[in-house]
Length: 367
Image 1 (cartoon, rainbow, N blue to C red):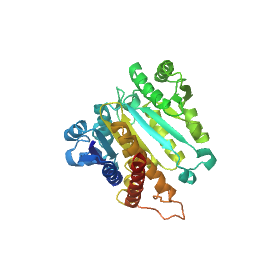
Image 2 (tube, rainbow, N blue to C red; image 1 turned 90 degrees about the vertical axis):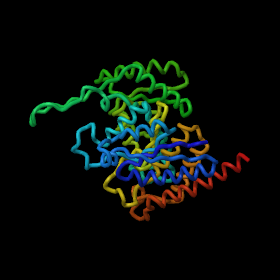
Image 3 (tube, rainbow, N blue to C red; image 1 turned 180 degrees about the horizontal axis):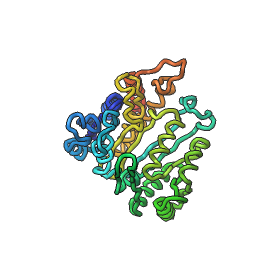
Image 4 (cartoon, rainbow, N blue to C red; image 1 turned 90 degrees about the horizontal axis):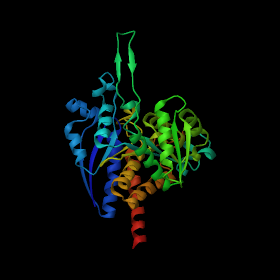
């Protein structure tokens, strides 16, 4: 298969972790007989520095012409004083909108080897396997009007949360379909005791649930969900949320399972998916060779599974990540006080080697 990808390394640690994910993808392609076709483009702060546009037209066209997009990260404090439409994050939001990527999938899994990395007791976090299904193109992040108006000292800021029934229904159906392949449980998170958007959200999700009688639907307010996430994380299966709630809760889950550096994501729903680690650009550690590339590598696995339906190849990558962790390799975010930290490139190379062994075993089994 031709794997035609646009690579957007982005800002901060984005280029470092993306490089390791590409090495793993190349090893997968070599092992299973696929052809990897890559083109690199700028986004975010890197694009602003080059063109004064966080999403240059040539970047968008390259993404539209590819089969999937692998993104590193966007964001830099150097652009904090820029107007909203010229900040690095504006490029990412516009990319998601242009590609129609309305469904953000964020797994949060506690690897057995990392139970001691969680701030929770091992018996609480053991077995945690959550999939956040976050609506990605609505809510406060995209709602209009939005503004800051008035004279200094008396300014008023406005953001608008808006959701239409079709947008709620389509993300709900993504969650229910995915739950059918897991433990058949969906928790819909809202704030229906306060927000009209959440009342409509709950009504539409409840209606959609009737088409999935095998899936158990429950509802929870976002504040209660945040508390339960640290009290009983392994009780969660598929968590369905609107945009901002999903952003916050999925990052909280990263802390629960040990590190944001482990979290991958897939933004799907349109013709071209965008795959990126959750951790952001982390400019304070950029260039030091200590960033955790596993979130980017696991994002590459999601890319293979969701954009190319290559489940076997994706499973090899996921198995490789588990293998390197079982063998005790830890980047700085995971290493304890008495452990030697593995560099970004060392972790990537170990993942490549583990993936090759798993791929050989998979092919022998098929033969």
